[in-house]
Image (tube, rainbow, N blue to C red; front, side, top):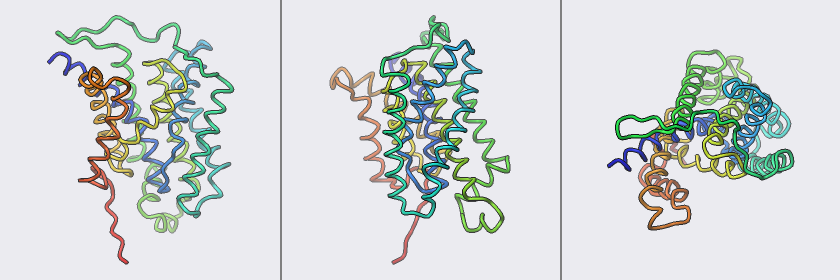
Length: 294
C-alpha cells in the first residue's frame, strides 16, 4: 500500500509538469490545427536556458522567469521566420516543417551545450525528504509540482480574463468571425508559439531539475503527446487532466511492471494506454467532435 501511495503521489506531481508542457501542444493545435512535433526540443531548450541563467548566479525562480521571457521571444521569432509564410498552406506541410525544426533545435542544443548530462549545482532544493506520516516526499518533486501548478493557473487566467487570451480563443473557435472583429490571426499564431515556448521551456527546466539535463529531455517532451491526445487536442483542461493521468500511469507501471518487463516499460505504457483509450473516445475527454458531411 505504501508503494502504491508513493507512486500515485509522485505520479501526480510529475503529471503537473507534464500538464505544463502539454499546454504548449494544445495552444498551437487549438489556434492552427497543427501538431508541433518540435515540442520536445522546445522543452530541451528551456531546460538548458534555465541552467545557464542559474550557473550565471541567478536564483532559480528568477532564472525561470528569465526562461519565460526568452521563450516568448524565441517563439515569436520562430513563428515569424519559419511558419508565418505557411499560413493557409496544407496542414501536413506545416507539420513537416515542425519536424525539421525539431532536428534544427536539437543540433543547436548539441552545438552550444554538448550532450553531457548536467545538473543544477548547488542543488536548488534540500535533498532531505519531507515526511508525511509513513510517506516520504522528495522536495524537488513537491516544489516543482507547486511551481508548475502556479504557472498553469497563471496561463489559464491569461486565456480567460485578458484581451489577448480571449482573442486567441476567438481565433481558435472561429477564425473568420475573429478576423471580422479585427483580431489579427498572424499575431495570434505568433503569440501561440511564444506561449508554447514558455510553457514547454519551464516544463523542461522542472524536469531537468528532477532528472538532470541531457538530450533525453527532448524525448520526455514527446512523452507528453499521449496526455494531449487523452485530454482532447484542443482542450486546456484536458491537457491538465491528461498530464496527471500519464504521470500516474508512468509511475505506477514503473513501480509494478519494471520488475517483470525491464527495459523502459514506463515509457511504453502511456502510448499503449492512449491507443486503447482512443478506441472508445477517439476525440479524447474534451476534444471537439467534428462531423463532416459528404
